[in-house]
Length: 440
Ligand SMILES: Cc1ncc(COP(=O)(O)O)c(C=O)c1O
Image 1: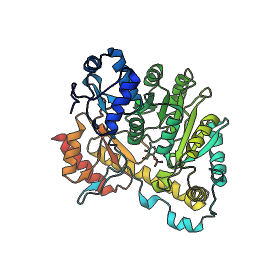
Image 2: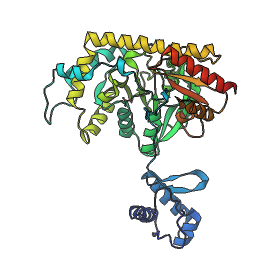
Image 3: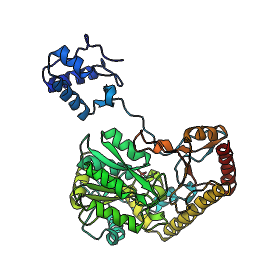
């Protein structure tokens, strides 16, 4: 419902007063999420002010996260965005190849490990990071970053990315993200009012030309997945990482966040993105994919200033990530049996991806076999949404590539098929069903 010009109830003679008045109407429930505010020209004439004053008032509303502009359609009161995430709700009679989840059988038994954990409960005032986990993190990350760094622990990677962005950026700032993109990163940008600038991903990772374009357009941060990109499964090659580093070298103050979510079970080497000249950087290593998403721990190595900002933000809110989770993480990561289990998980996921890509290839659906991660990305030469619907009607749940668009105007015609628990029989039957749909 558009607010009526004559009875708008909006008051004020300055941008600040007009924006305050609209915020009060929203607060009182007289303007609801999704409602449009009056066109600039109309409100200016109603209030007897210059159009620029109303335009400035609307900019204040957008900056405060109260309203959003939808191009020529106008300015609207912002609704709480509905966000897509990993996971799915089991549907009886369906085979779920959509969840993006790890195989529970390949995760260590956290319940059993809890009983063996050397944990003593700290009180307020204790250092935020568990010393044993910090030691493990420093030893494993030092050879890879080769410069001074801080270690901070967050409640997973998505939490880390959000805290990092909000520590350095403000609402309205532009952030370069991969296209297609991990759903939670798109959501983080939307919720915090950052503007997504898409950077295409090809077989070797994000593309230098697109990155250069994004950086030249003024993005303040780049979020990149160096390995096992979700959804495509692509990883940065050494050559690509070097080329991207050369592009980033001209923009030393742009925050570079590397979300290395598959680290310990990746089948690819890690190639560092941020060049030595980058002043603000963070390497985020979540344990969700190999110790389980419920452990809610990510290790963040970052430049020292970013580390200080991150821990200050933590102190102002959650304070610290439970030492119980931290100690459990470091006990598990230091356990030789768990290390063997992780190696087994890496082999098994590789085998399952190949099982699926092989079965697809036998049906003439060819996808690259260089992928990593839990999913297989199947590009289509037609609109993927009806294909996803037809698969669902036959009992196969997969994710529509369109969901992973970095911005809604660039949907991808592809399927993301989670291969983490797939069997040979299922891979064959799924490929046959897909081939039949594509032939129809
Ligand atoms: C790219 C990417 N980053 C991070 C994560 C894990 O996030 P978190 O540590 O918050 O569970 C995932 C899980 O699907 C992912 O695909």
